[in-house]
Length: 126
Image (cartoon, rainbow, N blue to C red; front, top):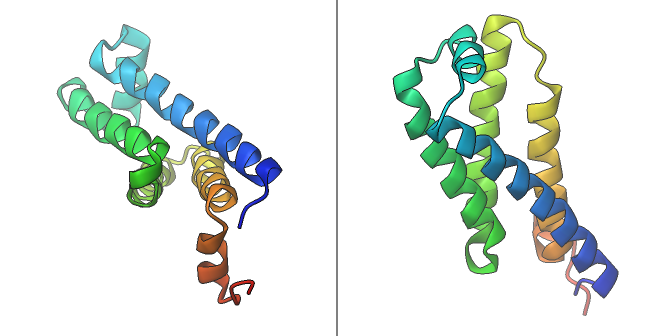
């Protein structure tokens, strides 16, 4: 069972991750020229941005809803994996994308400690 402080910390981290992804996704629906240029630099055409934005937004929303948070965490991880692969392919740094994925799981784990116990093979407290 998570303590109140753990749950609060987990929600703070989760909202930070979800908020960053939601803000990022909105830029893909009404792209500014510098945003289009940045995405073209990593190999994406402007026409694909709304589709990527939908995937990003859906992942973030599912992550923030308690009943779908596990699925959302998996989707956020996959999305960040794609972002990391994209940045590695063009030789750009990818620390931020890696950190977002890690922070998402730390936040989820603080919200739901049984996930951490399962991931590390720990026994449930009786």
